[in-house]
Length: 114
Length: 109
Image 1: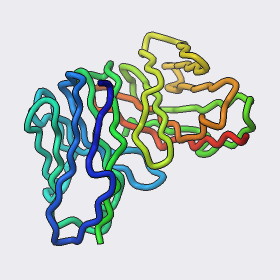
Image 2 (image 1 turned 120 degrees about the horizontal axis):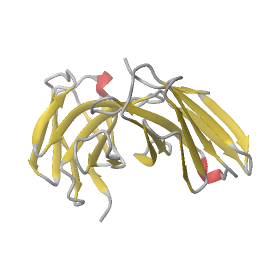
Image 3 (image 1 turned 30 degrees about the vertical axis):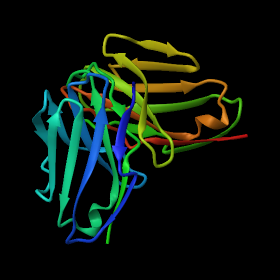
Image 4 (image 1 turned 135 degrees about the horizontal axis):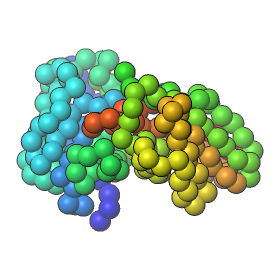
């Protein structure tokens, strides 16, 4: 199994809602990533987990809360989001958190905040 | 910022032609990677070239790296309509990867 899966594919939420994005991989990768991508822009890194521990938080607002329950799963909990948080949220994984490892991306969750 | 800058921002070619995209970056790197993204989807890794390599091939892809000029190029030969996508270079000195702004390639059948 060489893919990263993400659920849901689309999500519409109000500013007072709480929702979660889910990412899963079964490639034995020990590094997992969340990216945010606005239209016609490159992906921007949000969080990195290495061996289930948060290793990088790119100054992301606390309304985004990541969680790595085990080596195969990565969640992104969303609460009190703003309309400007609407974007494509991409999950990725790599063998290790190393510059020499390619990253495998999921198809993304298209999030709309009303 | 060590973000890469792709050039051109958009490129439109006929099927069968070659497409060349360039990437420039600002700081020294460990390696440079190229990714493809079909509209609104996840990114797909194409090729990684290490800082001590000058050229690398993978199928119809040819990547060059000039560390003295801090630049890389991606050549897609004999393009196909299915090559229509955005192409990003990604650089790093340490993790994480930093993606350039991308080149949007349109291959017209």
